[in-house]
Amino acid sequence: MVADSPRPPDALFSLPLDVLDNILSRLHIYEVVRTSALSRAWCRRWAALPSVDLARSPGISEPDVDAILLRRSAALRTFRLVARARKGTWSVDALHHWLLYLSRSGVQALDLSFPELRFRLHPCLFSCGELTSLALNSCRLPPAPSGFAGFPNLKTLRLEDVDVPRHGGKEVAALIAASPLLEDLGLLAVKLIGDGPDEEWVIRAPNLRNLTMVCETAFGGRVEDLPRLDEGRLFGPKCAKFLAGMSQSTEVDVLERLPFLFKNLKNLSLAVNFF
Image 1 (cartoon, rainbow, N blue to C red):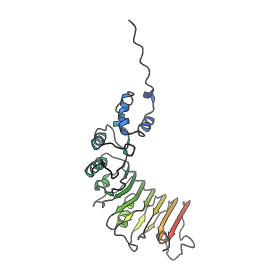
Image 2 (image 1 turned 30 degrees about the horizontal axis):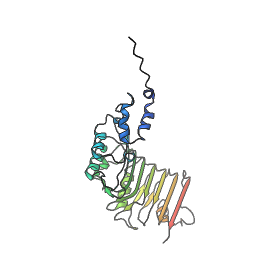
Image 3 (image 1 turned 135 degrees about the vertical axis):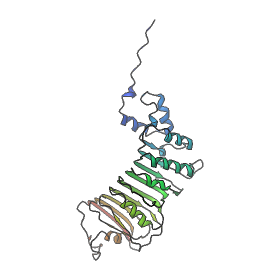
Image 4 (image 1 turned 45 degrees about the horizontal axis):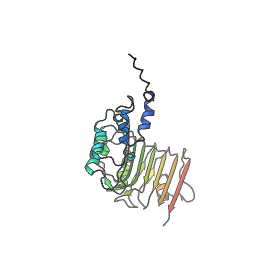
């Protein structure tokens, strides 16, 4: 009798877990599931991936997304979704259910984009208390519920083409104030509903290092207390007025010189529409 030849070593088994996860995170989720047949190390690894990027998985069905989320064997840390207005797209109820699941799973990084949909997010967004990064694009932000405890770990906030309801400037200012560790803030073409050039609200972020604001229309408010700011980019009407709010005195002409000092500032870009 001929002895069975020894099983060749599983080369994939020796891959470091972070390398394996990096590889799988770049594939369509259907391909990720199929990799279970390639190696013992890869068997059901899809259920433990720390990140799920549905932007890399066009055509995935609602039931399959449900299965990916509900059959997980480990915490989900990063979730990215791009939902477009086309036939076969996911239903509003499904999007709400997924966000509710994420709010209960301890998700740390959330990137949601809804081109053409203007989707109104569910208020459970404000229950994602472990967020360190939040990026929202082309959607409507719900009002923060009473008793909102804030995002105590949030370091990056990016809102692009987002509608913020009822006294939008004050809502944004309150959201920033409720994120004491915030270091990177981007407000790009944000629509502050109910906000006019005479509205009073203040952005205070003592740990902020990077600030980007791109405004299509004039709005009220100002910024104060940005002692650690490294880089600022302000584009839009009345940026000079907004910038002057950082000063102890508003009598200085910001077109001649800055009325304040930044000990850490390395780069400041301004584009002002004077009309």
